[in-house]
Length: 472
Image (cartoon, rainbow, N blue to C red; front, top):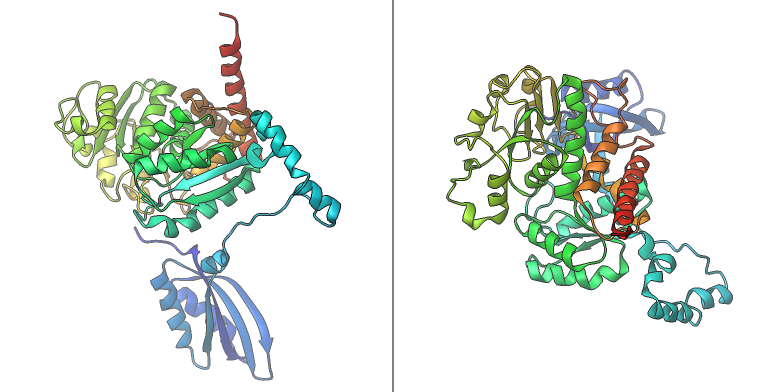
């Protein structure tokens, strides 16, 4: 599958070109012949016989960007100047900052915001720590915690390389839900040390978002922190993905006229995301799921179950017919395929063996389990993790609203009911009149999305609190 030009590889090239003839139109033609797309062209200076032209170009890779630039340099009379990578420019100096919410213009304001006035607030909190949610940033602040062991599709690249991703996550929290989030990139991949560090910093936050921590350590880290902290802990790679998959599947099933309780689902991938998706689908009412990993179909007689508690759970709660064999063999006759595994493990011919009205979620990123165009020849609905195809399964649809709701409800824990409610809320933002095979999830810029998800989370949390406080 060839990559299309993308703003992710957008460059701006400064050129000096002749001011006469068709020099400018020739620039555009050369870019297009080289496979790029001109997204902006600005004449930023001129003289009697020369023009300074800034050309913004979308390419498909860094190598493609260089090839387009070289092609421009071969135009007669054109000189290539500075080349700016727009993605790197956006990241210069980082993408987030801290700003004061109060004025500090004079001595009176300084005395209230800091010493001596702040001591009164500190003493009040020492006497009543619960007031921290009212009197400090704890009321609206989330820690985005990573060890850099499983960053995007890049693997174990470490905490420094993870920082731009965590900054982006914090920016999304603020943009879509008004949540103040801050990256904490830990220079350790020791499970016990990560747990100790997160517990130590937890008093300053209303929630913990675990991010890009590899399996199986992520399971233990999340489980222990949920048990030992009094604020919600959410591993987005697991539960954010699961929420959006359930939301998308809810609407895809409407498109093909099937019910979750009736369909046969085959999954590829039993890691963090795959297991979380499986658990949430079961909580939502799925009854027939078979999962495969790189060793084949997970079944109850596999000899590696004793070494992996999560895999044993998968074997015990899926594959009701105890099928063995390969992913391709399991896929025959299935209604739904959900992949969170590896690229190019299926072909269009494999999708053709599925049941009529098949649904394919090929979510390996950036290269899906099956070419989406091939899948569309045989499936009724196809979704990917990519932004250049319809139906992008993107965690940003879920986590801003989920945390907004958890914070507003002052929740201490995250339950399966919360996750299902969030998924239903996302699905509900696509009205029946808008629903079609290429539109099963809303845009990340849908103006009501985060609010709708947050309200659904608050309703569930309050219901649980009300039930727990009711007389027995």
